[in-house]
Image (cartoon, rainbow, N blue to C red; front, side, top):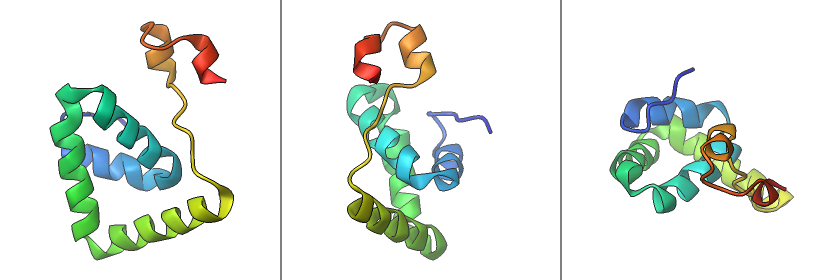
Length: 90
């Protein structure tokens, strides 16, 4: 699956694959990548508006509360681009 951080539709579909992990990454990217913040916020709005996705969101939040909060580790692309230090990935 290709993720286009400029397209809210692909963000929603990507998020739905693994909401526990992808939700944490999107929250982190919305803060660190202002150029994509609008599309990420629109995707969040769509997730909250869709009853099926909203249920998935609630289940993933419950799982995170049970298991502890997810940590948004850097992606391979971020490491390769030098956006974060490798030590931050641990």
